[in-house]
Amino acid sequence: MSDTPIENADAPAVEAPPSVVDINETPREALAKIRVVDAGTGTRIDKVIFADAMAGKVKRYAVENGDLVRVDDRFVIIEEDRQISIEWLGNKIRNSF
Image (cartoon, helix red, strand yellow):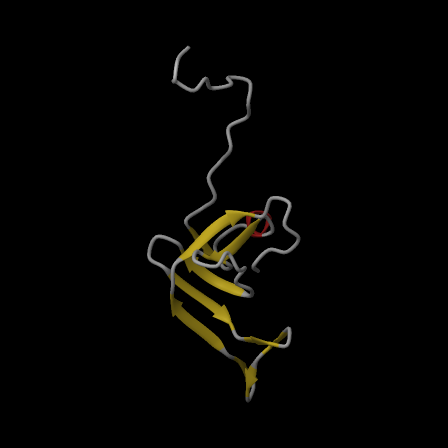
């Protein structure tokens, strides 16, 4: 018996998720299928504006009690350096955008 795994030639190839997403550049159809998560906890990061998994950068809107946070007439934006993963939504319910 061989220890070499057998690849199923009939199985569809699964495309890797992008390593960078930007709400101004990534197609909406793709954003609808993506979630950005904290790599350490697996917790979804909500209201993402930009994420780069390789650089560990996230830009997102601040959220409190499910609402976007405003100061005067502007939404608060948080820029973070943190380990993240960009994943396909799969059977999860909500994306990150």
